[in-house]
Image (cartoon, rainbow over all chains, first blue to last red; front, side, top):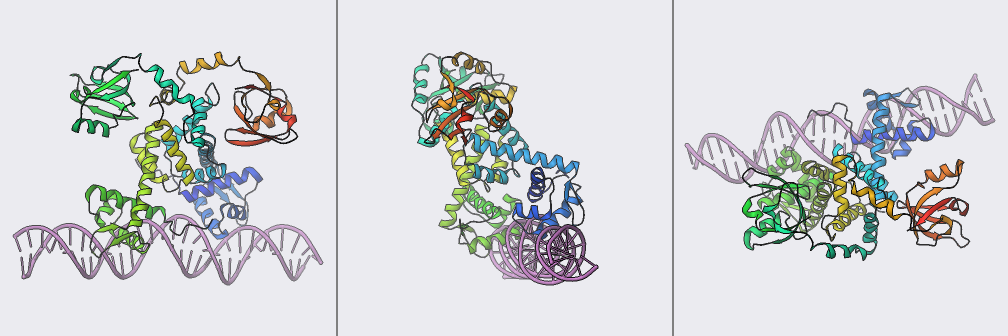
Length: 241
Length: 241
DNA sequence: TAATATAATTAGGTTAACTTAACTAAGGAG
DNA sequence: CTCCTTAGTTAAGTTAACCTAATTATATTA
């Protein structure tokens, strides 16, 4: 991947975003505003402004106001959006104190990949479109954070529902099936190899692919594809879900 | 807060962590190993080693192996743990591609506050101690990511369960009560003010405190405390949960 | 054991992001 | 209109984190 010519450093990103934010609050932006906002001295601001001007992100006349170009607005908006969303995720979902969420968002916005950022947005979206508005599990999480244990009603479910499903060897499942690991019928190296791969009791898995001759079997565990030989899959007893 | 004397820069953190990781793989660590691992040139490594030596984090004799001091081990372990956990969160929970999760974790580990990091750990822990192993909502999230909509069974619940609860004014709730917003019985400025504060239909809230005279009322919405006057709270119709 | 290859170091340079100190421009107040 | 304050700029310096080129130490092998 050719590195984006338009990419700017974290520091320049901060300046650009700050110009955008200040402008929303008080219409005009000056060197001193930026200096105060970013807690730096005026000459640092001036130097950065020269760089941003070179990159056609701002317009700034001698001793005058600072204005964003269209390109600058686009970039700044994107950065600000990133900032807002990350803060939202940290504060409103993970429940981090607002000030700290603000600080953290301010830092990591410069380093998160597009993929992760988009996934975070999806996560926020997933929660906000929840029919119950605030999903039960999230409240359970807050309870968990506060009391260091799950709420009592959160434990009960499991026991009742696990004996009505079929118990089979992992090797007998069809593609697409989800199952929960019950047991590994092997001691020794094979068992510890499987444990190392994440095949622990209670773990949910899904059969992704099975090669023509029934081996290897591609198993999805915790978002990771693992390839098992048939001999190995036979040692894993699962409950079909 | 006096800035921690023991704090080191992100770059130094990277070097320290890398020494730890390389040492686990091949017992001995040399300048060239670090240079290759971090994709920098040898003189850069040498310079950093001098700094780490000054801070008593490593021992390094002329042309010899690099060893961590006890202090260095502690620090490096903490950093590595942070790295591993963040990657786990991104990859195994948010479902980000492993390589990208690795890169992102590598960057943001230097910038996340202690609070947020600990909360992320709690989140992982919350999911891993779930009795169903892989909670249903998380699978719903993966479905949501893949198909851009919630799974069909995820919509049904809500409609059935919402009419059996009491419908009252927010101002009539007791401290500690949770409720879902049904309606705001006001148009005009007050309504838009409330909407701006997050009082939207479907939103869950909790009464945190009520002042002696019944006003103001401290309401918790999305982890944020909002103070409402009684007149305002009377305009909000909620369903008690 | 001397020759040679490889690894580590030193010396000196670059760039980004800051600083202080000194200077200049612009906008009132008297 | 001049003086003065405040804001902005320029010049020159610092530090961290990299680099290249040259030098020195260690290891390998003929």
